[in-house]
Amino acid sequence: MSFDRLIEGIVKMQNPTVAGLDPKLDYVPASIKNACFEKHGKTLEGAAAALFEFNKAIIDNICDIVPAVKPQAAYYEMYGWQGVRALADTIAYAKSKGMFVMTDGKRNDIGTTMEAYATAHLGVTDIGGEAVEAFGADALTVNGYLGTDGIKPLLNICREKDKGIFVLVKTSNPSSGELQDMKLENGAAVYEQMGRMCEGWGEELPGKYGYSGVGAVVGATYPDQLAEMRTKAVHTFFLVPGYGAQGGGAQDAKNAFDKNGLGAVINSSRGIMCAWKKQGLTEDDFARAARAEALRMKEDILSVTGEIRTP
Amino acid sequence: MSFDRLIEGIVKMQNPTVAGLDPKLDYVPASIKNACFEKHGKTLEGAAAALFEFNKAIIDNICDIVPAVKPQAAYYEMYGWQGVRALADTIAYAKSKGMFVMTDGKRNDIGTTMEAYATAHLGVTDIGGEAVEAFGADALTVNGYLGTDGIKPLLNICREKDKGIFVLVKTSNPSSGELQDMKLENGAAVYEQMGRMCEGWGEELPGKYGYSGVGAVVGATYPDQLAEMRTKAVHTFFLVPGYGAQGGGAQDAKNAFDKNGLGAVINSSRGIMCAWKKQGLTEDDFARAARAEALRMKEDILSVTGEIRTP
Image 1 (spheres, each protein chain N blue to C red):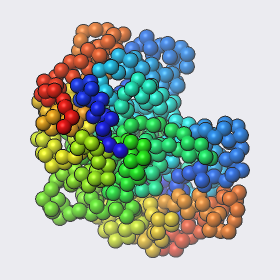
Image 2: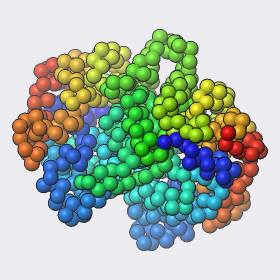
Image 3: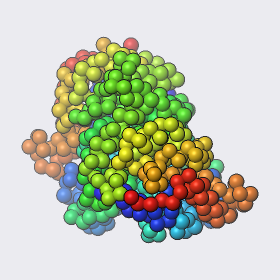
Image 4: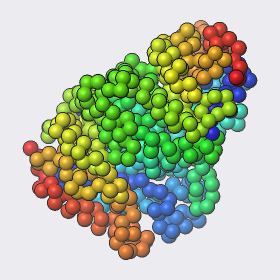
């Protein structure tokens, strides 16, 4: 019902990072692609098989040093239902290796429909009396634009199944401020208001380390707002994109953490998946390079947090 | 690059409605479910097969009188990748019957990732030089919380492929006002600001009937805001949920239309899918009942719009 499991993984591995699995076919080495195309043709099925092989190799090479993965749903949907099958397979594989899995789907809808999304990604689907996990992630990113009744069904499932959600608060992209930075009559910016709503929703899902099961997405590309929100949303655990390929560094991400080095998990996707390019290696070395980059990133972040402790 | 095709369908059929295909397994008659469970077991595959059979029967019975369908992604994801395959099959089937298909996914993300969603749902995926449609809908609902660079990739694909998007502006649910109704310092409510952004984005996708390819979701459950937005977002075509099961009637939906009876398409999901209940029929009559309800709804809406004409 909170992020306690994630926090325990972070402390155990002394690594507050999550590896984003946003695999474009372009990132997959020719050797893997060709083998899959030979078997399935240049089809959605062939592409999806290649993505899953790629993901497995990344997971195998980082699962003992990185506590969590975050597959981005868009990059699987791009390859049709076959791609979505690769998403399901990736989630199951990462869980089998003990990783905490956050599906980055940014789902949002009205109450009855949100119940379906919550069931799909975090819960259990009833099929004529049989209970089946459709995707079974540990956490899901969501968009709170629809207000409380678009969030409530998630809270119920988080409580029952020990899962969490991350609500978009201040996103990492250049135009995030167009709406999110606008000032409301009450003096708060829209993102700040969304952060308040997260604190409110989180009261239903308290955690033993001070952080609830309602987290927030706050980008490393806006370090001032990150620092502001860390002070204002003290029970809200942050998922921080924007490190690495998007331009944020450890000094920016630093603002996401509390004095114990807790309070946030920093995401890197392309930085890890395409690490071989920066390391002067060949594409066939992608998995080994991903591990080296994950270790470098861990040290980089730890240099600003110091040892991570539970309170 | 606009909603011209949808508008032409509406005028031809004199029916500004869209049938929502949000099939829960509970809505599917036992005869269909049991046949699918016998073949595939009580599995995600069995459930997905039942949903697709149900959808086909609805589509067969309304495709000559209703111009569009709106499958809601959540209800397919709930049944895993197998459910998502049923979504793809449903989209293809509805298109083969000449219907305009809007995938209700409320997708949103930063630019590079939104490109993947746009490709997935409206565009064409490149697989080693082969161009493959992953889902191939005609329109997609999206959430604009991330601002312009989360919308731009959609505009590019809409222009190239003659597709459209509907951005959430004022949603139909009870708590939609928590954020959307908050007043900004500039005097506008958040939903109004989002409507302005739709008008701006729409300038890139002009249509020949005055409506751009950037539409907005505005709920029939808030008739005053619907009337307000019709006046303020004059080039923005509305997708209007909330009619029927959610409580809105034709008098509420009326505010969505311009003087020609254009400007909006009204959605009904449960009202059509579960029409047999209200008509005192048995569940095996669901498809016939859906047609009768679609005809009743058409007359109900036309009674407030009068004849629908292009300008």
